[in-house]
Amino acid sequence: MGPEDFPTVGDWVLVRLPAHPTDLATIERLVERQTVFVRKAVGRSTSAQLVAANVDWLLLCMALDGNFNLRRLERYLAVAAASGAQAAIVLTKADQSADLAAAKAEVATVAGQTPVIIFDATRPDGLAALEALMQPRLTYALLGSSGVGKSTLINQLTGSTNLATQSVRSSDAHGRHTTTARQLLKLPNGSLVIDTPGMRELGLLEADVDATFADIQALAAQCRFRDCQHQSEPGCAVQAALAAGELTPERFASYQQLKAEQADHQLRGKARENAKIERMFGGKKQMQAKMKAVRQKRK
Ligand SMILES: Nc1nc2c(ncn2[C@@H]2O[C@H](COP(=O)(O)OP(=O)(O)OP(=O)(O)O)[C@@H](O)[C@H]2O)c(=O)[nH]1
Ligand SMILES: [Zn+2]
Image (cartoon, rainbow, N blue to C red; front, side, top):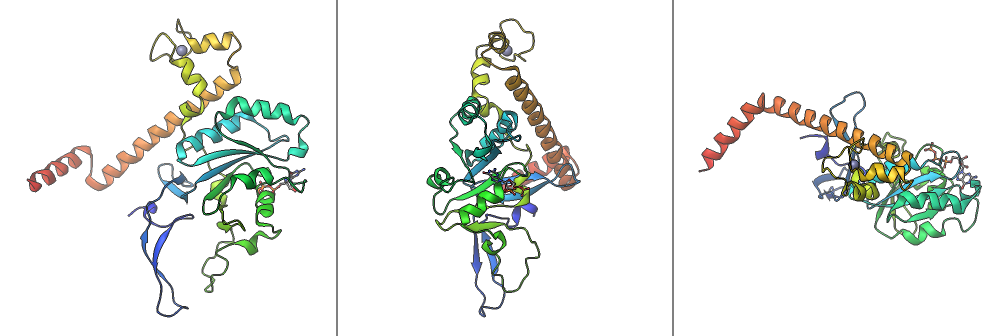
C-alpha cells in the first residue's frame, strides 16, 4: 500500500457507522477518484504526496495588481489541463486594475476556451460572475499565489468573515483533527470548496503543456521537420511566426520552459518507477522473470 491508498481531502468513502454514536466510524472503501492532485513530497525527490481528490473545477486565481503575470497563468493552465478538472480563470482585485479591458484582452491571448471571471471584493456584486458558475455538489479548488485574495474570496462565498467556523470538519466531537488548516468547506448553495495549503502551492508536476499552447502546436504542425526544435531549422513555422510578430517571444519562452520542466518531471517519474521495481523485485530482469513465472503458472 502506498500513500495513494489512503483517503485524502475530497475523497468519497463508504463508512460503517459505529453501534454507539460516540465511537469511531470505520472507512470500508474508498470510492474511485475522478481526479487527483499530487505534489512532490518535501525532502524526498522521488515520492509524491496526495493533495486533493475529486476536484471538479480549478479556480486559477490571479490578482489584477502587481501579481498579474501571464506566464504564471500559462503555468496554471498547463497544470489544469493535465488534472482532469475543468478550469476557470478568476481575476481578483479588479478595483486595482488601471485598465481592466486591456488586462482582459491580455488574458484572452492565453486563456483559450477557459472562462475568465472577474472578482472585485470591494463591490457588493463582485461575486456575481463566480456564483453564476458554481454549481451544487461540485467541488472547487483555488490555485493562486499568496495574497491574491483567495481567503477573501472564500469568506465572501461562505458569507462569513471567520473561516474557521465554516470548516465542515470542525464538528468532530473527538477533536482528533489536530490540523488547524481548513480542508473542505460547504457553501450555502451546496458547492464544495477544497482549500488546503498544499493545493495553493501546487507546482508543475503533472502538466499538459501542449494542450495549453494550442497555438504553438498548430504552428509546429506546419514545420518542415516533424521533430523540429523550433531553433534554427529551415522551414520552421514557429520561428516564422516569431519573426512576423504573430507569436510573442515571451510566450514562446514560457512554452519552452514548461516543456523542459515537464520532460524533467517525466524523467523523475521514470526514476521513481525504476526505484520501485528495484525495491520489489531487485531489478528489471528479476521482475520480468517473475512475471514470466506467473504467466506459466496460469497456463
Ligand atoms: N483592493 C482589493 N484588495 C483585496 C481584494 N481582495 C482581497 N484583497 C486584499 O488582499 C490582501 C490579501 O488577501 P487574502 O484573501 O488574504 O489573500 P490569500 O490569497 O488568501 O493569501 P494567502 O492566505 O497568503 O494565500 C488582503 O489585505 C485583502 O484585504 C480586492 O478585490 N480588492
Ligand atoms: Zn519548428
